[in-house]
Image (cartoon, rainbow, N blue to C red; front, side, top):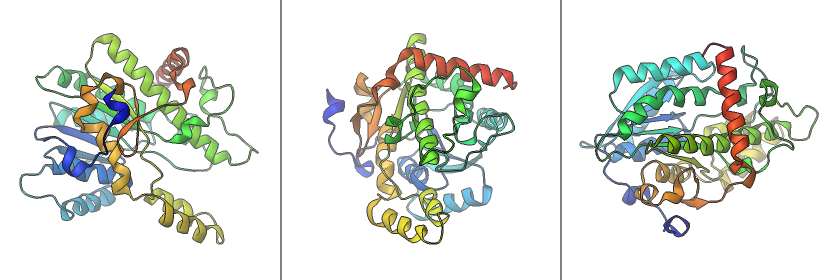
Length: 322
């Protein structure tokens, strides 16, 4: 039961040598993603910072280098990735596969926080878009090939949150409208939409792991709760919360939320710590700070609901030609 009694994890001392590994971190130009890139690159990996904005990405890469990439460390490269359209997510994955012959780890930390309800041109609400699904799906052939290489350790890490424990009643994923729950007129509607997407994320992790296991692909998929982190997204939300609320939100975030550097511990643990490969309990598992196996909200382990989410997602994508 190593996973349940994992010692406190420190990425500065407990990560293996990652030389020769190729890694993608989405949403990596700020917050937890950027901090994770720092830790992984310091251990020798070539890390692609997948982000939409070139200027912000290159500034973040320079920040990572200045914070401690030394000769002999890995490198950080910008990968253009726009999750606002599934077609663009697919193109980004295809562009990556033209550059690289292997892919050892994918960390998906890109996400919207608390946003007003709006739909994309494909009729799916923005916060529940299936574009991370498209990105990973497109990369799976390369991930599977890499997993067959000697001494490989291929992993997929999906960031989520404790909010996955607060889904709406009667969750189903039978039609596109099931993805578009607005919670109109309800208290804290934006929070409920956010929690709903995190519930979907954990379901997806469980279903993807089940399908990979059925194929015999030795790939480990985990969901990660990084803690309550004081990210740029949190600060931007605080600053947009109105004249009277903004200072309060900022004070709470600065005083009580953990830093992105500490928030990245669980993410990096899931991505590269040896314990993950050694203990089969981590497969499809839920990692919580500072790097240990936690328990999920039980309905996310419903195999029928996971299958329903997967199949409806595939149908939605087929309908829009992706």
